Length: 218
Image 1 (cartoon, rainbow, N blue to C red):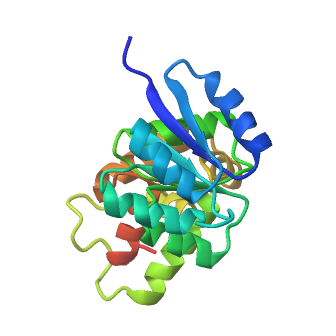
Image 2 (image 1 turned 135 degrees about the vertical axis):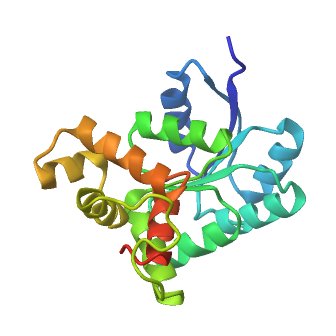
């Protein structure tokens, strides 16, 4: 068996930590090795435990989640942190990502999606809640409006259907929501998304949306 992914939980609410521990314990490849009730405790726990992934709350007394993320990444640049919060406020989104978080999820995420996010980040990827991803794409669009023609820089152009799905993806819709919108099977949408990522040379949905904006597809 492969080595379990070791997780540190950081949240000032004990009940939330206990709930997360129970959810993650259901996954055989995930292991919660420690907990911390605030940012300061998180720094100490990280130093002692060296976890693979940190699930970090935002609003905590003393050192909050954003500041703790800054400090962790400053001291341990390879620290992999997922911000898990009830807030999708723009300020928290951008500050958290600027601090070096590799993931940003809302606490109403399902246990399955949370586990997948942990695996993605542990493997070196990044994962952002679809509604939050839409904010990130919008911010990039504001900062750097497209100046090139459609499909410039792509080895293989996207089909009209792929562009349609890409635009819905960039708007924060999940595969299921896109499937419902277009009256298609969810598995078919998943295949389209895989092809889109490949053509754009993107690692994940957020990166695909940003890349698409740069080449004028959305």
